[in-house]
Length: 244
Image (tube, one colour):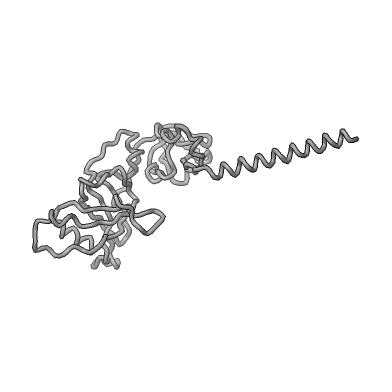
C-alpha cells in the first residue's frame, strides 16, 4: 500500500509540476514583445482576381523572437490600409498569412472619395532637405512649420503663424496613397515625394469659411512663398508630435 501511495503522490506531483511549468511558459510568452501580421480569413473565400476588403483580414500576434524571416516576408497589421483595394493573385482556402509576394499594387481611392463633405484638398510643399518620405504614410497626422526666415525672400509678407499648424492627416505623399514598404514590394517608384496632400476643412457645409487651422495653413503657405515647410509627425498614442 505504501508503494502504491508513493506512486500516486509522485504522479500527482508530476501533474502539478507540468501545470505549473505550462503556466510559467504561458506567462513568459505573454511577456515577449510581439509582432502583428495580417492573415486572410478562410471564411472570406478569396479567389484570384477578388478585391481585398478590410473584413477579409484577421490579426495574428507572434513573439518577435520566434518570428524569424516573417518580418521580411509577411505583411504587418499596421499596413492594412495599404492592402485594402489590392487584387488577390491566388486563392485563400485556409487561414493564411498575407505575403508581400502575393500582392498587387492596391487601387487607391480617388481624393474625392477620401474627403469629407466639408473638406477640400491642399498640396503642401515640404522641405526636401529634411523630409524623408519613407518615414511617413498616408493616414499619418502632421504639423507644419514655417521655413527659416533666411529663405523667405519677400520682406513685406505677413508674419507666419506661431508654433505648429495642424495636425492635418496625409491623403497622399506625392503620388503615393499607401505604405512605401508594401508598394515597393510591387516595384513602385516614388514621385514628388516632397509634396503632401492634406485636407482643408470648412466650418459649414456652405463652404464659405475655413476653420482656424486651415486658415493658418493657408497663411503659412502664403508666408513661405514657394519654400518648403518644416513638418513633424503626430504621435499615434500621445498628443505630442514626433519631430523628424
